[in-house]
Image 1 (cartoon, helix red, strand yellow):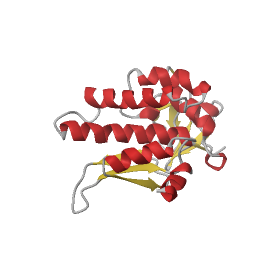
Image 2: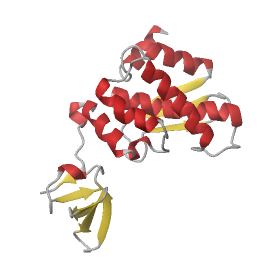
Image 3: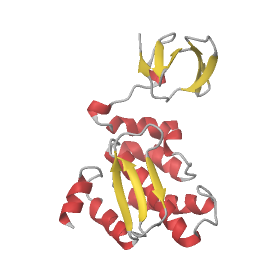
Image 4: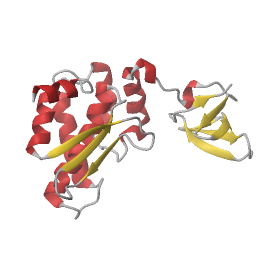
Length: 203
């Protein structure tokens, strides 16, 4: 068990690993640490096959606080599945209540830094299906990203700067509420892109 705790300590805030491991063991859940995935930060799959284990995966490139929030998101899915199987919406009322309870529990234990508490407290009142769609929380969490994995967001670029998202290149345009009206360089078509979108500057 000590080796498992030591391994989790690499990804979680201090003083969290033992209790998290107890939860995983109690619920017969396997946690897999994944490499960076842009499409998702975590995943939950119910028991199936011979092992009959809950399967949770979390990106290992997340900073400790983002890792914990993502893990709690997936643990809430596990709790809802045990209580309701597939009879309720994946991110419906039952999941929101389970996730909210987990967030509040760890917030009250003082695990998160003070500067993170205001956006996290606000987010916990009505959790979203994608934690990182909450731009205030996402921006606050980014301050603890690993130095070698520091991300650049659209908001960080100057006006008219060219950038890439995937294989497409765009020019940054004016802000419309929470999205910039950007022009695709090749086609000239315009797209509304969230100001917290992760980008690769080209010029």
